[in-house]
Image (cartoon, rainbow, N blue to C red; front, side, top):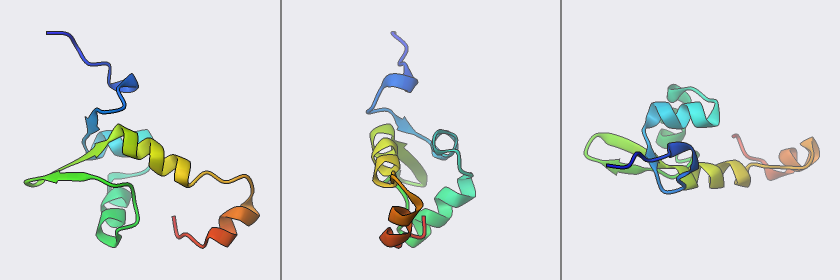
Length: 78
């Protein structure tokens, strides 16, 4: 069976730990964002939470700004 190169597969689903590492935040931060509906979209299957890598990249891109002024005018808490 061929191995999946997680680093380059946009459709791979990452667990909480992997997603936190990818974004350089703690697992607790991701959990808080989920509770407040503020973080990246995720998939919940039973008790398992998975983050599609594609969604993590999109979340990062949605938070990308050119200046602190632009960041302040967005009014986002993230």
